[in-house]
Length: 337
Image 1 (cartoon, rainbow, N blue to C red):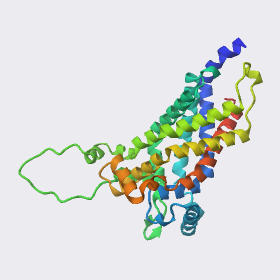
Image 2: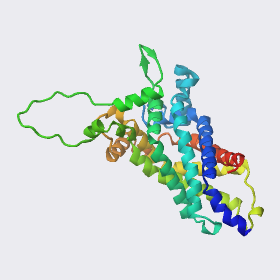
Image 3: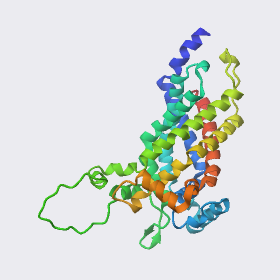
Image 4: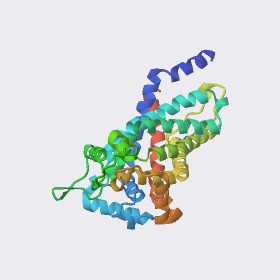
């Protein structure tokens, strides 16, 4: 038994284990996102207050009506608009998130005796923040692709591609204002506009701060709940050989509860983030600040504005999280991680 205990840390922190864990996580994320892609499209349109879909927001029937409208105008592919960017983002995002969680969990909780709710929360929050840091530009492109509803090409409807959405973000610029001549030369102040001009790649990080902040309660609560449920139904014993094995149904149920709770505590951050992400379409010359975004949401819908689309959010996040956790565990078992 001592030999097993001494070799386990080496195994879990080996490059082979890290790669297998990441592959399982990336595949799980892709499967889960594909399952809920149509719901995700509708939810983004609601959160970002797309004017064509504002009348549908706020109810289950409205979500169904919005889905029918998208299907009627653009067919089945319209419900998956932006999904290519989703898959490009979600594989590295989920791979890094689950891989990071495996490693951070092992560092913070190397044995069952070290497991606490605070450490579970910290492991989840840190893994979520790590994945966002590396994949955020892909998330912004995906949201822009899903937000567009009236893209045209020579008078004919067309859907924005990944490259066209990325190009649009990169080239965003305000309308030219008339230059007023002056004999006094005053150096221009360093503004967001000048920063965007000097560093165009910063445009791909609109809404990044609120995303990073919102990831703390979202991923933290998700992995905290996941760990709690598994520790209750699968208590660790003194001998690893006698530990109870998880089942797909338990993984699905634990993931579903984790998704529902994490969505509830972090949803206002998600609404603010969506508004800031599409802000380049209305304010291409600058960042949309936290304060003005929060105020705009409050002015248009009060406190309920921070929860617009929450019902469809549950409809999306519960099965998505359930599938992602279950497929992650299945993938790790198949790959021997």
